[in-house]
Image 1 (cartoon, rainbow, N blue to C red):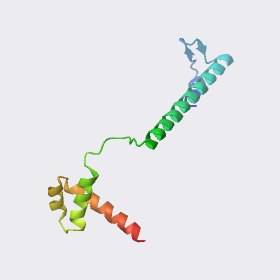
Image 2: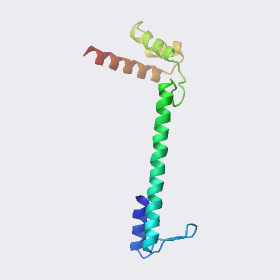
Image 3: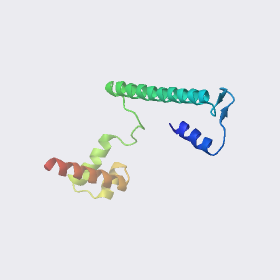
Image 4: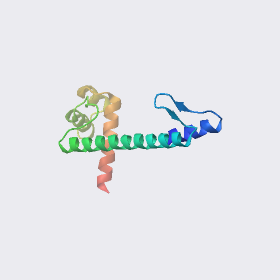
Length: 122
């Protein structure tokens, strides 16, 4: 659709679009038809690629694969850092130093855990 709108805008400004490689002259009725057909085929192909990608990701998830960047800090390490603060009254800094995680990140993990606990209490 963007291509067709662009070609209409160009045409209104008096410019004639001719694709030399495909031999399509947009100023003619048949050239417009060919362009519209090619644009529709391109859109269909884009949609098919998207559908295949989504289906492939769904199959991968179903088979236990997880996409994205691998976690740098293990879930066990995160859990221990939060427990040191919430269950053992460590300061954020002490927990961070003991866990090898930045104080900022320990603080974020603790905040997130408190939010989850608050939601589960309601």
